[in-house]
Image 1: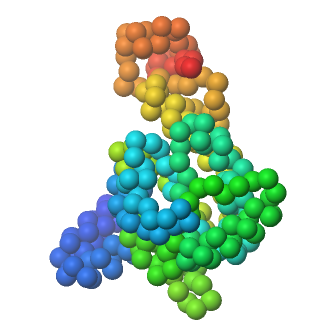
Image 2: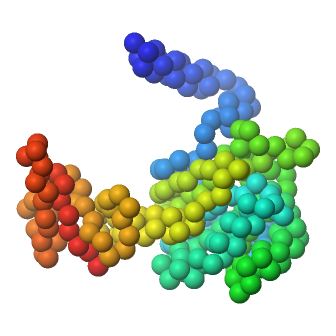
Image 3: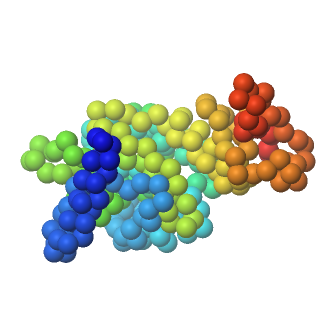
Length: 251
């Protein structure tokens, strides 16, 4: 009964939002969780350290990692940007673009980059960082942190990271609170998994890394699997006698 009651409450809440005047509905929407898998990223035009950027044009036919930061000259963000700069060549090898966003102006970003590069000598922040001093972009991208505020009580973005596909839709998301830095090695690993799954129409098992076996989705019959994977596949023998766990190797 509890689950059914909650579902009815959620449906009523959605209907109530739908009946609100436009401004009130927008405010109600902003209070909901941010962008998620399958959502189209808003096509915003924003200032950045590389000049004006329109998000959909920047994505083009590539995959893009769009990641937000609570603010310039802050400790966790500085370590994250330095780490991302260290992985930039690896993402570039995969044809994946990087786009950061932080709630300060372009000049502040440029000054901050000097600190980031000094913190980890040899690493260059060559990707653009979008400016959002008025917090308009984080509202439209729905990246507002529900708990964190700046020293003046203003809104701050959470540590959201979205991998956006060529169709401008979110393919994978990470969401961290301001107090917890992201693991850029895991971002790279997840990117490899996502690209491999898209390229070969497979899935990747737990802790998968490139070169390891992948799994064949349940919707693929054995006959189709034999055609798609001529090198063969291995089916795990399980107590249920259900042949759903099938491993194969892809390039």
